[in-house]
Image (cartoon, rainbow, N blue to C red; front, side, top):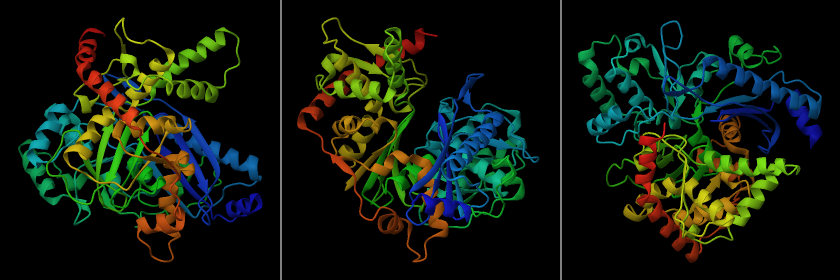
Amino acid sequence: MKADAKNTIAEGKAILGIEFGSTRIKAVLIDPKDSRPIAQGSHEWENQLVDGLWTYSIQAIWYGLQDCYASLRADVKKQYDVEIEGLAAIGISAMMHGYMPFDKNGEILVPFRTWRNTNTGPAAAKLSKLFNFNMPMRWSLSHLYQAILNGEDHVKDIKFLTTLAGYIHWQLTGEKVLGIGDASGMMPIDPDTKDYSEKMVKSFDKLIAPNGFPWKLRDIMPKVLSAGEDAGRLTVEGAAKLDVSGHLKPGVPLCPPEGDAGTGMTATNAVKPRTGNVSAGTSSFSMIVLEKDLSKPYESIDIVTTPDGSPVAMVHCNNCTSDLNAWVGLFKEYQQLLGVKVDMNQVFGLLYNNALTGDPDCGGLVSYNYISGEPITGLSEGRPLFVRNSTDKFTLANFMRANLYASVGALKIGNDILFGQENVKVDRITGHGGLFKTKGVGQRVLAAAINTPISVMETAGEGGAWGIALLASFLVHNPKGLNLADFLEEVIFEGERGVEIAPTSEDVEGFNKWIEAYKKGLAIEQAAVENKN
């Protein structure tokens, strides 16, 4: 198999997927015959809070991409002793939403404003009312309109507005396009036309007409493409930007750039109606592919699309495992003080599995994992907070269980609307992301939270970089002309369903009791925001 992989790479037949996550940029090289990863690269990075807004600099974006690709090259060299000269296809993915406006010279007008920013509340509220459609604060159009409401001078100079994935793709190919899933996080999509809602585009243009800008919305937005459509080829300049060593040749086809939600759906075989997935890492979100429209808009539920344009109910939470990881880091420090060799997989495994021995309601302990604001629960800012009464059962198991519950607490609140009020039906929900790395624990917690069986596939740990590589494969290796759902089902996964854990009545009852204390205690979290700088 190693010899086959070496030949695949040497002959330029491998497929590359790159995804920009919140804390890591990851590259995965896959074999087109069986879609298995044959090499990987990565780069760690972190957002910065600059002038009150979360951002990544342009310099950090390019250094991260180039270092990630260099890491991939090094892995290929180490494993196979060959150089990457050509590729069959490339896919670029990144965290969705945010605000990247560029001028006529292709220069960014303000620092990249990421999905994590919650300063766009007034704009989101006005647009939601205008469209009769929930416009989340993190969506690109909310950022744009907030900049207009703020009277920011740069708005008049915008020539192109895109997401992080759209920006990287543009720089590599020269094409100002975006995959429909990522585009659906910029502004609403019409499921019939598989394009931006023309009605809403016209409403927005009319709304901002008094400002006299020299552009209309469609002038500055990327063209929408569905999975499998041609999205351009790697240019000479693009190849040099990606591979600073100069070995990679131009001309490689690229699939439409996608958001991390779309790659998560792809990586978990969840693009058919009545399927869904939950991604749980720095942030968390659930995606349920709908059979029909919801009865009305909900502030805590976003309507986005699969990479091939099917409507999806998305519950997005800004916070998930960051605070949980910070607590685990304390136990790492304690081990180091004792002079004990630290194996982080072992630390996570011991603490997580011990949590399952705690009380189903965590003994009354409550944790808020709010590193940043959390729109689901109405918090514009966050303060990580742990709360208990003197009479609560303060044990290590309950403490860790409370922090695990907190990682999906806001997610539960949103999903209770879908399954309780809207009676949405699902046949399969698959979990992926860091929360599920310790076998069985995150799965059991999530199953209890949303009272639904949760599956985890062996491949789910490959993540979004693998998901976008699959979309790139769909572009160039689909001789039967299958649609995306059938391509995944019949070619990639071949009926694989993963390992499923069903909720127990005891766990569900315990989580429900815990979430009521969590909701009641949100006033404490709000007080912390107001009084702790």
